Amino acid sequence: MLLTMSLPAHTPVMVNETLEGLQPGRGGHFIDCTVGLGGHARAILERISPTGKLLGIDADPEAIRTAQDRLSDYGEAIVLVNDSFVNLRAICEKYDFCPVDGILFDLGVSSMQLDTAERGFSFQREAPLDMRFDPSQELTASDIVNAFPERELARILKEYGEERHSRRIARHIVYSRPITSTLRLAQVVQQVLGSKRGRIHPATRTFMALRIAVNEELQSLSLALEQTINLLRLQGRLVVVSYHSLEDRIVKQFMRSKASNCALKLISRKVIRPTSLEIESNQRSRSAKLRIAERSK
Image (cartoon, rainbow, N blue to C red; front, side):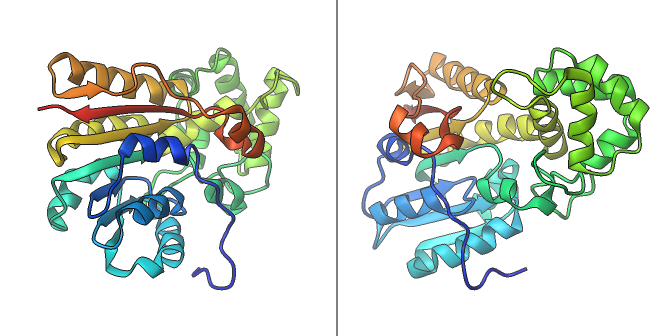
């Protein structure tokens, strides 16, 4: 469905820190590997216009359509591609877009995806168990929940959700099949863990694990990061915003590994977090972690 009258509200996370990390200047060429609703992309385009160019990538076709509407005033300065960033090198070669001055990853699920009930990302709204970034791919969360063996389901919950009670939850999911909706799955998890679990909903880790598995997020991130080195020009910047420990661990290990052989220089040795003021105004930023590196050879 094309967006026409109104566009969803969007506040990009850690936008000032991102710009400080990327250091975009007039005439620069940059890649936003997760263009989403276009918040970071617009901030970059404002700095590199009128002669700079930005390549925006997103696996979600709805995100690409929204970004096209939001950024239409930049015309040919932006190229938008509906694809996974796991294909980063091939995309850059196709559009003759390298070397570049900076590459940005803003990982995780977008506010639009969470707020669109039928996408099935949220445990707070009734929806089919979908969770695909790319609606054309075959595997859905429903396939995992209703067809995967109990042992494999438990592995996914433990490995991707860091869920301590993964075996109990997996066992109860299998016992409760078929599970056809987000609210029903959340209810099944609550039957195991209870309704209270500190500050987070009991189903948070289960939903995160399923989303990561459906979209192969961690594998794609590792593969994409490896492609960035040869796409960056000398002193080009790599900036990654992550939202949970598994993502951040991959980013940290990648940057440190490349720094050890001098391919990258760490600009931020310690992780950068949002300010208390930003967290207060945008609760979705509270778990964000930003890391910066620069190509050094």
